[in-house]
Length: 436
Image (cartoon, rainbow, N blue to C red; front, side):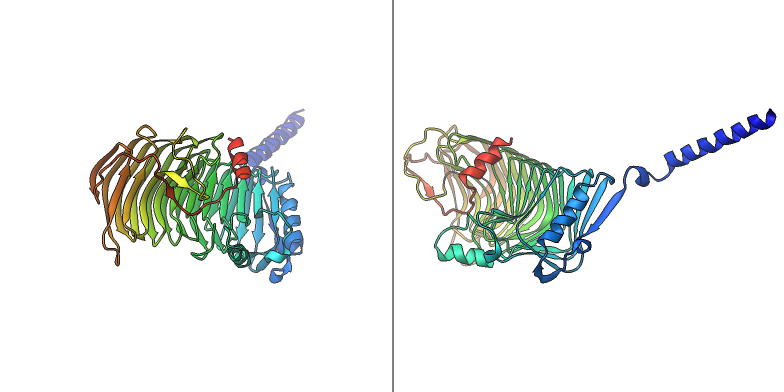
């Protein structure tokens, strides 16, 4: 009998020991298992000539739809992978998807694209998506720009290079994108995005090549990197909240803009809690800008630009409620306006390549409230004889501002007619706003 009890005790002790080992043993085996998928293992060649679209799609499906792992690791090893327009759709069964780009991913030439495709690479409905370098995405934008410019039109119908729609917990780290046909990166209807050490490049004359385009999204942090394109470095559109941009170099391009808000009068566009700090602009068309379209509705509030350096910028500081994107602004009076409130320009210094260092023009005395400027010092750039500040129809608080502000009433018929520098067609903008 004693032997029996002894055997039982040993068995129980052994079982308990196994259980404790399993519970204390590396949780990676139980809870954080990772599946690694290499696109070459699914037939990708990576020679820069072969169309690897099918192989890349098969690799994504193999990892996204596999429920045996908590992390999916999707790899582009060394090589040059040519792919046509692709959409990577979730939700994925792993709780986190990591795309490692060591090689280069290149878009097929324009003549190989199907008709009416508006995006080269799109990720949608993917939670906790991470894309990291040191490789690059090359949108092969040359043929796209040449065609639309030869037709003497804007390039607003060209495809975006990298689009993210309805992604939560998005991380882009060390990503390089060159020669996008249109926007390099578009973030729409997402919740929580972190972008670090970004590197986006396109020629200065490549129309509509925004660096980062944000719409209908809550919580975007951009920290560190270089953006030099033919359009806005960063464009913040309707339905965007809690955007923080810091430690960035911008140029060439059209600067950082909030807007264009109010393109569709019947749609209320709202932007709030925007912070831009420690950004340097080099030879850009604009520096920091808020722009709303005549007769628009909605609001832009709690916006701060601070610690900004301007180096030969054509229009360093702009706040305009007279943005006229399509050169067809014919009305001479406002029925409504996007309401602007709580805007701060602080510690902005450098040089202006144009005559207007500061340009603030509001629709009426009530449409812009709580606008403050302090510690502003903008001098003429080399070759520019002098600079002035313009302030119309706005009650602005200013402290230590050079050139000094002198606000005057705004003539009812005054309009600032500016070329289209950011395009977001009506259909896509309505879809973006509808997702909020």
